[in-house]
Image (tube, rainbow, N blue to C red; front, side, top):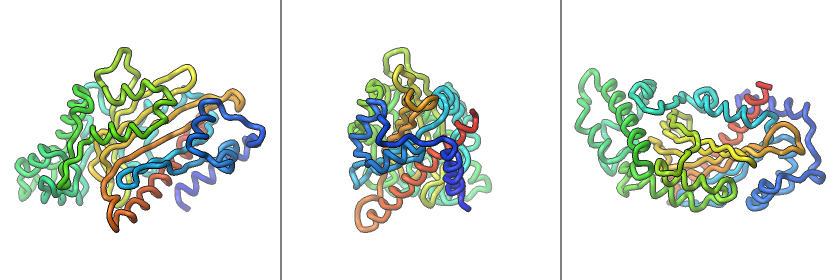
Length: 343
C-alpha cells in the first residue's frame, strides 16, 4: 500500500472522530469566504472541506510556463503549533518526497551544505555542461567554473565537483542575503537566458492572494532585504526533493508573519537545479471560532518552468500539473496528521 494511500486512510480515521458541519449550515470566515468565491470553489468542494477532507484544484495560469494550485484543509491544532513546526523545517519537510532538508544559518557557512552531493546524472551532465547547453540549471559564471576549475579525469573529480557545488550554494545565498532578488541567478542552461528575479516579479503580479492576505508581504518578497523594520521572522533552507525523473535541489526563503486575523507563511524558491525557474507558496492560517480550536490551512502555489511549449510540452505540462497537485494534497495530509498527533 502506498504512503499516500496510508495517509488518506489515516485522515479518514481522524475525520470519523470529528463530525463535519453540514455545508448548508456553515459560513466560512469572511475573508476566507471571499477567497473561496474568487477561486470558484464548487459546492461539493466546500462540503468536503467542512467534512475535514482536503481539497486541491488548479488555478488559472499561463500554460506556456506556469502551474498554479490551490489547496485547503481544516487542522485541529493551534496556529502556534504550526509556526513552531515550520521553524523546525528539517523535521516538518521530511519523509516521502524529501531526500534531505537543511536549514541554513543566519550567517551561512560552508558546513550548512555538507550534505549537498551531486547525483550521478548531474555529475555526468556537469562534465559536458556549456553555456547555453546544460542539463543542470546554472548561471554563466558557475558553468565556467565547472568547465575550468575541475579536472574531470582526476581520481578526485567527484569530490571536487561536490565541493564546488557546495561553495556555489554558499556564495549564492550569501549574495541574496546581501542584495536580494537583484543577486539571483540568470540561468544559462538554455540558449535563451532566464532571469529568476524577472520571472518572480512577473509571477507575483498574478497572485491575488497577496493582496487579500497581508498585502505588505509583497513588498517583503520583492524588496528584501531593503524592507521596513521590523522584518518578519524568516530563514533560508535547502532541500533535495523527489520530482519528475530527477531529484531536485532547491534553495528557498521562508517567512512567517503573524497577524491579528491570520498568520501568513511564504516559501519563495530562490534556486532549483532542475525544472523550475522560480516558485512561491503562500500559506494562510485562518482561525475559525465556529469550529473550535484549530485553523483553516490554505495554500496557493505558483511555479514557473520551461519545457511546457511545443508538441512534447503539452505532455510535460500535464505531468507537472498532476504531480504538483498530488504532492500538494499529500503535503496537506502529512501536515494535518503531524500537528493533530501532537494534541
